Length: 111
Image (cartoon, rainbow, N blue to C red; front, side, top):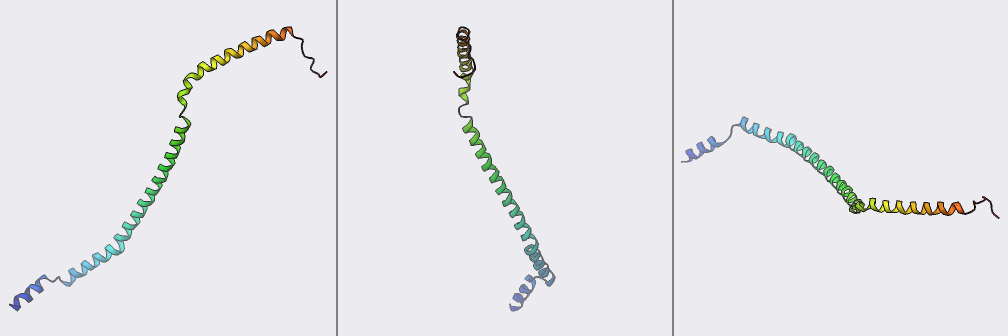
């Protein structure tokens, strides 16, 4: 019976070269793969930070544009108001021209 247990233990044990290769693979993973993963995660984190800053800048710009253009709906009546103002200015000009023709011309000096 003890001979069967000894055979089972020796059969399940890995040969030295396989054990060495496993330790070598673990060492490579520890000193090569882990730093590469850390480097890539750091680059990803920096990129996400840049994207976040750009989104914040875009949000601020968009809210400023929205604030500046909130009253553009009122521009529809601007043309009519300008036409009325122009007509009133022309009436004033005509009135002043009529009054200026009958009034004495200024001499340009103080009395």
